Length: 312
Length: 312
Image (tube, rainbow over all chains, first blue to last red; front, side, top):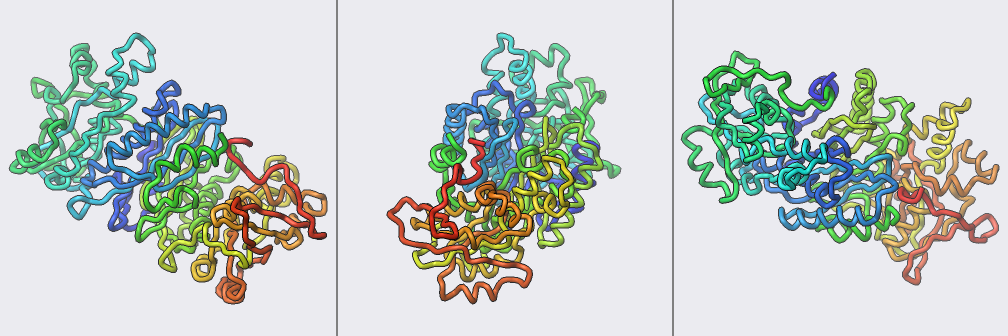
C-alpha cells in the first residue's frame, strides 16, 4: 500500500469529529486547530544538517500547515528521539534553533517527550487558532477560482540534491532545503479570501491533486507561470521542470481564490510574501485531476505526481 | 547529559504558559490537557511484538498520563514512521489494535502523519479534559499525605525480560509488557482526591522521586507493601526487588492523598482497579528524596533509581 492508501484504508475509518476524514493536514478541536508532522533523519533531514536548522525546519514544516489553514500558530509539543551518541552540543544547538523560531513566529513550547533510540526523529504537534472562525480546508475550491502558490517552487528539492551530492554547492540553495522560507504572514490573507488551501510538501502537482480531489474539481495549471528562483530557472532550462514540481519539500501554500477577490488577497499579504497565479479551477467529471500545460498549451506528462513515502 | 538534564537545561527554558516548566507529563491548553509520548522499536517495543498490541500500548502509555492527571481522554493524534518493508498486513493489524482501544477508552483519532523511514516509531499526542477543573500535578503532595500506587509493579519489566529472552515464558507475563493493564477509571478518583500524581513509566523509585522533587517533600516507602503479582512475588523472593521497582514500563499511577480522604478515594475507584498504600509524605529539607525501607525499617540502597533514556 502507498502512504495514501494506508491513510485512507487503515486510519481514515478510525477518524472522529474534527478530523476531516484525515483528508486535510489539520484537525479541528474547538477552539483550536492541530497539525502533526514527523521528521526522520535521512528522510526529511540529513545527518549532516546543522541541528539548529533541523529544529527550525521541524517547526516550519508544521507552521506551513497552519498558514495554509488560515490559522495563527500558538504553541507546540515536541517529541524527540535522539541517537544515544548525539553530542550534548548538538542538542543544545537544536534548542537554540527552537528558541530562534519560537521568537520569530510567536510560539511557546507546551510539552512533549524526549527519549533515545537508534536514530534521530523529531515529531512536532502544532496548535493554532483559526483567524476567520474556521480553518481553510482542501475542499472548498470552486470552478472559476484562481489557483495561486506562494514563494518559489523546487528550491527545497534542488537544495537537498546539492546537500546530498556534497559538491561545491551555492550555500543559498542548500539553505532553502535546510530551512524552508515559509510564507509567514500569509495566514491572514488565506483565512480571509482563500476557498481552499494546503501546504506544498509532497510536490506541487501531487498537492494540487489532493486539493482537486478534496474539492471535486479539476485544476488547469500553466507551467510557464510557476514561480522559480534563479536556481529553479536554471534547472528548468536544463529540462528538469518535472523534478521541480514533483519532488516536494517546498512548504509553500497552494490556494484558490475567487477571481474578484484576488486583488484583496494580494493586498492582504505581507510585503515579503509573493503569491503567483498559476492556473484556474474548472468543473470536474468527479475524479479531480490536475493538468499541467506547457507553453504551447499541451498537457505535460509526468512519471510521478509527487513524493509518496511508501513508494520512494 | 541525561534525559532529565536535557529537558531541564535545553527545553525547559523554552516552555510557555501551561507547560508547567516541562516538569509534569501533561500540558494545559484550556480547556484541554495534552500529553505526548514517543515509542521506538527496540526501546519501547520489540520488533516481534504483535502490531495490534504495539498500537494499543502506544495509546495506553499516553492514557496512563491522562489518568494520573485526573483527566478524561477524548482524542489523539498519531504520527507513524514505518520501515519501508513493513507488510501491509502489519499496518492493518496496527489499525485494528487502535480501533479496539479507541472503542474501549472512548477515544477518536483526530489526525497525524504517516511516513516511512529506517525503523518503526510511533508518536501519540493525546488530548483530554480535566474532570475537576484543573489537572492533578506532580507538585501538590503535602506532609502527612499517604502514598498509593495502582495495580502491580514490576510486571512490565518481567514481561520485557521474558519476551527478550524468548524462553518458554508464561504468556501472561509477556502480555503485561506488551499491553500494560492501565488503571482505567482511576482518573475520576484521582481528580477528586489526589493532591499529586504521575504515571509510573521510568520506575517506581524514579517516579516517586519526580513527585517528591516537584512537591518539595520526602517520601518514605515500605518495600514490603509494594503490590506485586505472583510473578513479581517470585522475583522478590529471588532477591530481585530492586529491578522490579527501578526498571519502569508499569504505566500505573503513583499518587498522594490526604489520610482522611483515602477511604473516599478507594470508594471512588472502579471495582477492577486496586490502589495500595505504600508510604507517607514527610517534610523535606528541600531536595525531595525517596527512602525505601525494608521489612526491618532499614533504608534500601539502589544502584539506579530508574530508567534514564540517555544513560541506559
